[in-house]
Length: 104
Image 1: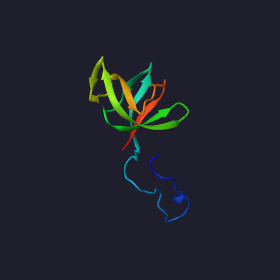
Image 2: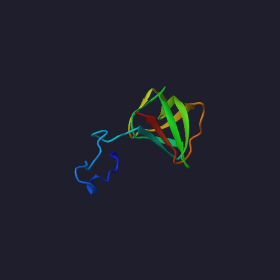
Image 3: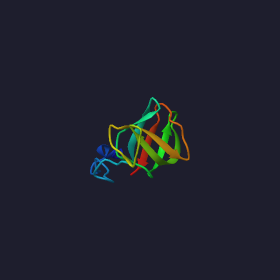
Image 4: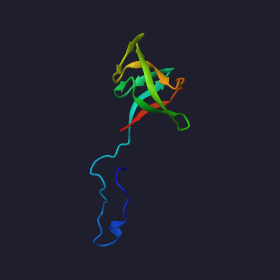
């Protein structure tokens, strides 16, 4: 949940919720998911982006997008629902089920 838990309902006069932020707190944006050694893009992805690769088992590797290939053509930007190949710096091989995320 985006709000912290409170026991204020047990005490009279205590607030029922603690509001540090009125909205949903998001720390990362999911960019892509690895399927069959290719990446299914979920949110806009751009060459040069500094990203984190989350491998199965929750190992996190910091890397950068060196280049993006869509339909055998090098592109600067990948849009949602594109299926692309990505080259990383430092080099990382695609791992089934891995996630690509970026800090907000």
